[in-house]
Amino acid sequence: MLQLGLLIAGMFLLQAVLSVFQMRHFSKEFIKLRRRGKVACGRQAGGFHAGAVVMFLIDDDGVIREGKKLFGVTCFARVTALPGFEGKYVGGLSEADLPKYGKNLRRAILDARDTYNKFISGEEIPQPPSPFQRVGRTLAGRT
Image (tube, rainbow, N blue to C red; front, top):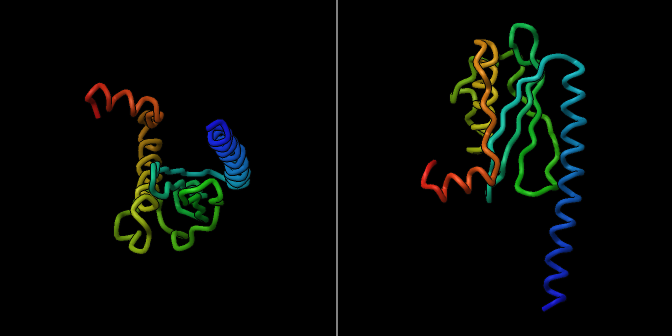
């Protein structure tokens, strides 16, 4: 029984270390884009499904110059190119622009659009609830 507990603890520790490496990789990619100009980001938590984060390098008019995505279930997912959006206005992206992507990646792209539009209009951009806040709201009967 002790060995099983140590194995589980070791797996959690390994997952935490690999997650740190993943976030460092994401941060480096974000910084590379940010040094080249403005970046619009969108995210969609995955839970037990593949989560997604998208980053669009945009010019001063909101036209996408480059897209990147972090998409996957595990901590082994890496930032990769997201082609097909170059020359499109980030604030005008619609469902029609996203036909070949999975649900969470589509939602992350639309979240980047919504975040950009809120920023341009001067609205406050709400932070998503943490996992603990979501559990608390679920237990309290709120969604």
